[in-house]
View 1 (cartoon, rainbow, N blue to C red):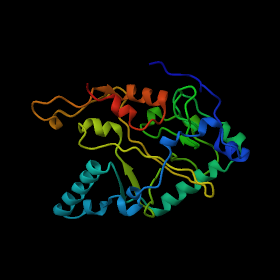
View 2 (cartoon, helix red, strand yellow):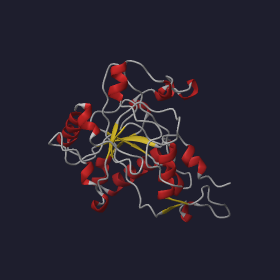
View 3 (tube, rainbow, N blue to C red):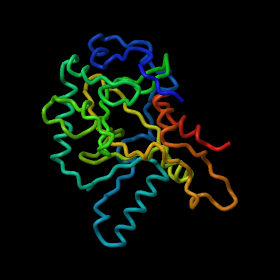
View 4 (cartoon, rainbow, N blue to C red):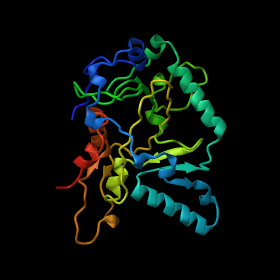
Length: 269
């Protein structure tokens, strides 16, 4: 699969859409794809909350904490963690500096516009499928580690305090200062379906700005993703076909956010 060099249609920024007060047709989801209120999504109380402080205590508490994480990955694919060890000051500073960037004039942000080749920089769409229905959201994507793939030309010079971060995150009603964790497709494949990746979305709010920060931990491009043999029962076949992470990433860049389509495409037939 070849990497597309340019966006199929010119990107439109959220600020431009908001100023126009008109929603273009390509941002209108089909009724079947729109979020609907549901008793199953009743807020933070519905989603497991794991206290990572237990990992620093005795053996029994460590075991209980790891079991809680495992149960959440198996039953939900989505959970929140508290006592994660990241300082509240650092979290507040990250929100402040990224809000500072997105509040800059459009011409300054456009200097860091991205392309489909790497997606690094300031962007407004994921996927290069022509005519696709798009999500309404701007983002800034940066490679942080390893240092060998870090592109310093894509790190904004403004605001001056912005030197180490990345942007996009949460869902449901988050607990203050907690992190929201969701299982990715690769973990679902690696565990042969024992842990499940979760389809999730963020809904725009007409009255309030939203700034989310997401951190993605990805394998090397050439790593073959397949079910661990220890998790495939004797006498059965793996549930998923092997695929390198690069192949998976290229599919994601081509199709953009598409729910469980990519994980489903890896299922063995």
